[in-house]
Each structure stands twice: as C-alpha cells, then as structure tokens.
Image (cartoon, rainbow, N blue to C red; front, side):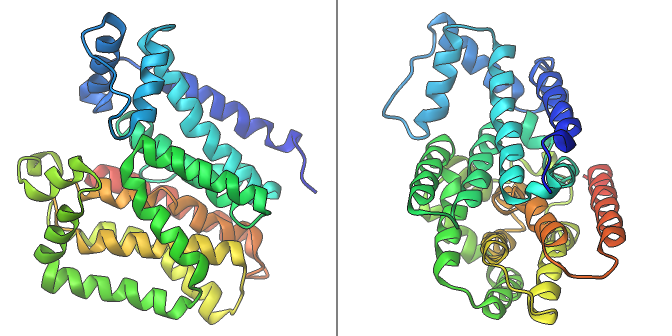
Length: 331
C-alpha cells in the first residue's frame, strides 16, 4: 500500500537537487545557456530589455519578468528547478504511487535529465508540464480540462511541445500498436533516403525558430560531436520501444495509460529519427526523450511482466544509468 513516508528519501533528494542546481554558478562552460538566461534576466531587472506580452512563448518571459522584480537570478533558477523537478515528481506520484521513488530514480538517471535542468531549462520546464498532463489524461472530464491547461502552459513556455501534444492527441484515438511500431521503423528508412527533404519540411513548419536555425546551419557542428546518423542515440531511443514490443505484442499486456505513454513516445521519437543528422538534433530528440524514463519505468513498476520482476527492474535501472554514463563520456 502507498505510504507517504516511503517517499521521504526521494522527496528530500529532489529538494536537495533543486537547491544545489538552482544556486549553481553562472557559467557557460559547465551549464550551457545558463549565462544567456542570466543576461536576459539582468536585462529585465535593470530595464534594458523590454517584455513583450504578445511574443511567442510569453509565459516563460512573464515568469522571468515577475521574478526579476522580486529576487536575484539564483532565486529565479531555483523557481525553475522547482517546476522542472517538482512537476516530474508529482507526475511520478500520480502515475506510479506505489513506486514513486524508483520512478524518480529512472528520471534522475536519464541521459537528458541534468542537461535540461541546467541548459535547456525552458524546454525542460515545458516538458515537465507535459509529464504531469499525461498523469491526468485518463481521468474525468475535470482532469481532461487540467490536461488542456497544462498543455497550453507548456506550449506557451516552449512552442516545440506542439509535437508531443500532437502525438498525444493522435495516441488518444489511434491504438494500433503494431502500426505505431512500423511507423518508427519506417522513419529510419525515411531518414536514410530522404533526410534532407524531411528537414526542409520541418523547417517550413516554423514551430520553433531555434530548431529551424539548427536544421539549416552547420555552424553548431563543432559543438555537437559526431554529427550524422547517430546510431548510439538511436539505440538509446530504442530501449523503451523494445520493452513496449515485449510487453504489448509478445506478452499481450494491455494498459490504457501505458499505451498512451508508449505510442506518444514512439511517434515523437520517429519524427526525431527523420532529423537525426541535423546539428543539435538532440534538442529535437528531447521532445520524446523527456518521456523516456516514465515510458521505461511504468511497465516495470506497474504491470506484471515477469515472476522475478524485482530483480529485472534492478538490472534494467542499473543498465539505464550505465548507458547514460557511457553516453555522457562519448558525447
């Protein structure tokens, strides 16, 4: 039975992470775009930058302007971390109440977790809102209104969340898992034979100006090692997909919440696979990777897959963390 006390350890660790990372030094060497966010914050604080309420992604800018009037930049980063980690923790509690601590360990061990807590913080915050939205979507009409509000907030913090929102809506109405798997496999072949055309198509959509710049430029190639077809990233992305195939197709275990998470992840990841050669395509990959730990953890912690499931969960969690470590070393 679920016990609040049993989650005290992971809650304490989450709070510790929030303050340690939120109070980090303003350094581009170690924390990427932290410096750029800080400069914008200082601009709002000293009146050199003007807030435009009609600008796209106005909600994050509004948050920054509001914080700039009452606190310093470290306070602002703490607030962002509260949203990034806190919303993730809440989503884990709602989706996996009996195994929240293990679910959060999967989140902390994910390849993209630290990066989007320090570098792509706007994207990270928006996607944590999306995770919470997934925890409400199978509920009542009132819960679905909450989903709409959370998606609205996520989109107005980072417009690129239009992709997982779209994939989530498709997954609500389309439940053919085999065809979803085939779409992902097909995306690999599409990337191999028509990657340039797909990049041009996504650029024309114009849903994220920064992504358009990354797709159209080689300026950032030296900042993203081993550009080209990233088989290592593809292998990383495939792990929860393989598990999904095993659970749904081979073991024939069906769970509406899991199918929604799995299908949304696969569809969003398939779009990234088509763009896998682009510089900084890892930023596009995050639009599926932010779901990675929950898509991996949910069947392991909720569904009856194996008799000795506890041992296998431990092995998979350690492999998950080890793979993340090796990916960090390789870059």
